[in-house]
Image 1 (cartoon, helix red, strand yellow):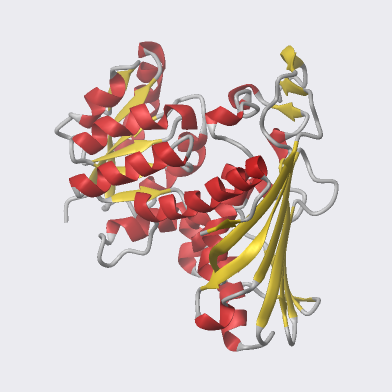
Image 2: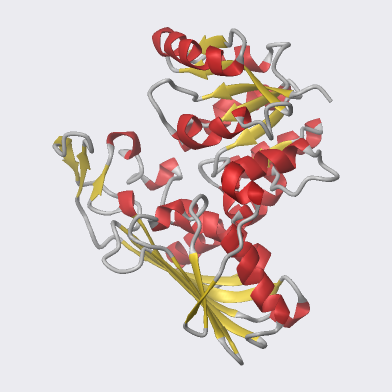
Length: 378
């Protein structure tokens, strides 16, 4: 099969998620015959030229550079692009992806697909009606620790699962953030501790235990003022942000519709806070009748990186070896997602826009519960 020709919206020479995590795996020998980079799109002609200069040698060909507001339409109609990858700020996702869907191109979207449930559903419906093969960024499901936790549960070592709790954090959602994240304090932009850290976790929760059947949530703004900091210099940038509308404390609880019937009714409690954690930035505990599984990260694996970093697993207080396959070591979670997508809709294990919309329904239910002070049945 000929490799899938990628056009990447948001691939910059200066960095960003596409440059640091998303695109590097396609140049690995295990994926090099499955994907090729043929085009990219940035915000300006100057940045497009810089990105073309950087990525053309890696791609082994001259990569086309598109830019500005017309760029997503141009890249969608490029006959040498089979798949459009959207890796820009969430508020720009809809306008970036719709030309590709309308052109019938395969699409990849960073999480979340839309800034809210309505946008996400419109994107997913458009892709379904066009018969477009799609993938959303749900890298956490490929983690070796997720595989190990599921294996322990299925082995019966902790008996019937009774409940599960998660305590985690989003470092840039508290009192400081970085310039590229300065929009996260506006809830209408769609990037919050609910949609990002918790959203990524729900994919793993679904694969290990199940999905929410009912949701009750509480949210609070305990840190009313935030500051933007330049990480290189350590200096504050611009004026303090005093009109925050995104929560920096969120608790979501409810019960699950189990992955298997025995898991129906598992009680779930998730607490996520904005800002660096003073304790473990990620602690997931699964309580069974006969034992406890604990999943932890360390200070250098913050909670916001739920989807990309491996974790430590403990069974009844004793550390468990998490076996990593060759694919785990060489491709990482993002590379494994690309590998699964290359197998096609019938054989690959990956999340589409449609399954991503199912996860977003839970997030929207949590937001509704916070607003209305009610329990939402899904």
